[in-house]
Amino acid sequence: QVQFVQSGAEVKKPGASVKVSCKASGYTFTSYDMHWVRQAPGQRLEWMGWINTGNGNTKYSQKFQDRVTITRDTSATTAYMELSSLIYEDTAVYYCARSDCGGGCYLLWNWGQGTLVTVSS
Amino acid sequence: DIQMTQSPSSLSASVGDRVTITCRASQSISSWLAWYQQIPGKVPNLLIYKASTLKSGVPARFSGSGSGTEFTLTISSLQPEDFATFFCLQYSDHTVTFGGGTKVEIK
Image 1 (cartoon, each protein chain N blue to C red):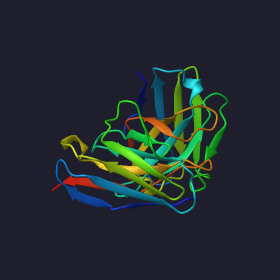
Image 2: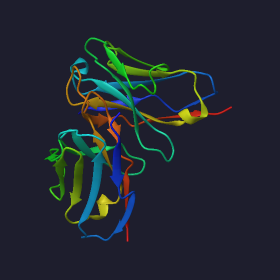
Image 3: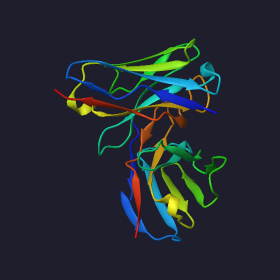
Image 4: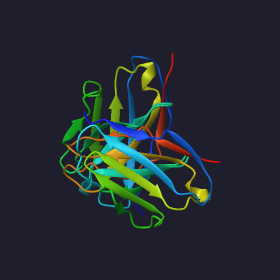
């Protein structure tokens, strides 16, 4: 069955970067887009961006455009989200989420278990 | 960006009650709206997509309606396992935005 295993919780200092991984299994990795979403405590979910896992093209939310990089390793069937210049407000659970198709599909069909990133001095 | 306003933010209901949750979009999104359930500590679970299409395996007591800017999720008879947070997601115009969520609690 479709499964995602995200990397473990992280604690980072302000100004640092964090890279979260999402290993996919149970389907053809390159046939479906992968999105990243976060949820800060008490806040609504926020969409960060997505990657076309087939050709590597990306699109980012304007809010995160300058600080986020989404990549993938097709041989490892893993997607990555790196967020730089962390601030306290980046403390959140970060989710990978697979779309319902590939090449520009935005319906989030399956979600990873989430990775807690805490920004603390 | 398209803004999604979800109401109510919370509600109390009893097992067997009919429950309705609404999402309004700041501009027309046609039928590009999905509903999810999230139980605390669990992964969001897709219930309905394209405003009214029930995902396979989701109980028929869940239904969705609407188009354009106003959408509704209805639970026809609330069950004990339905006490959770529900949220909408719009996926039109090459972006994704979320409603603020509705926490359904036991009365």
